Image: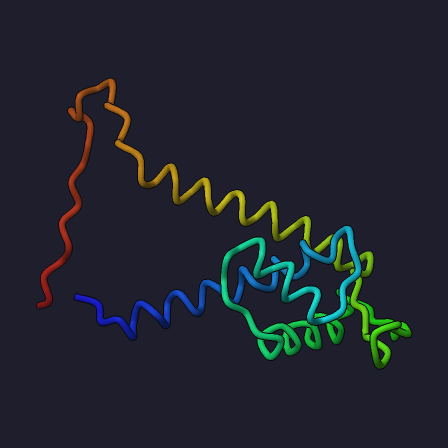
Length: 133
């Protein structure tokens, strides 16, 4: 049986990939500074996120040319660094969303009851694993 640590590790790995896509999706139509991005995502997903989780991803996305930054003066304090998608970022976001939809469909279809075979299984081969010699 799996231990809670093993489950948490799998969930963490799954979230990391999804979080990158969520950031790209949030920036698809709007620009955001770090904290506004965190708030938007926390509201949308009811997850607890910290700015420290978002900034390394934003930095990596900028290095990859998927996100661009711009400093903007603020009425409420120091200038804020705003993030927006580049053309390459938009393309990546669309490609990743398409792949995510395919993977979600795979999980949903794989979990459904099997469709009864019309040949009632008469032509099926059963493959047995080889025994170690």
